[in-house]
Length: 130
Image (cartoon, rainbow, N blue to C red):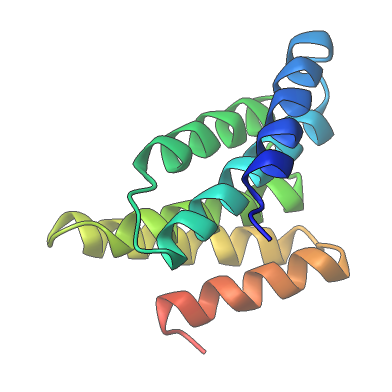
């Protein structure tokens, strides 16, 4: 079943929540996760995901401005940077991989919940670290 209608509805809800609650790290993390899920789906289908990667990074940055140690947002940002690295040519790719690995380490140090630890493991696999 095509997930796009559900993703679009979730994205619209997350955007509205960010407008209503801009000081909530959970809201920004949810918006970053929306873009991450959409980007992963697009990449898996061989489609360009730059817009969602950029949107997700902006949402993650906004969330980290509210709470710089919020583990779920750190994990989403790491995964988005790792996806960005996949589409880059060297030397940009090498820098993005280093950035993603640093974000994974930072997220792990923030004592993430179980779901975030699983996301970090998947990110490490994408980066070829585990």
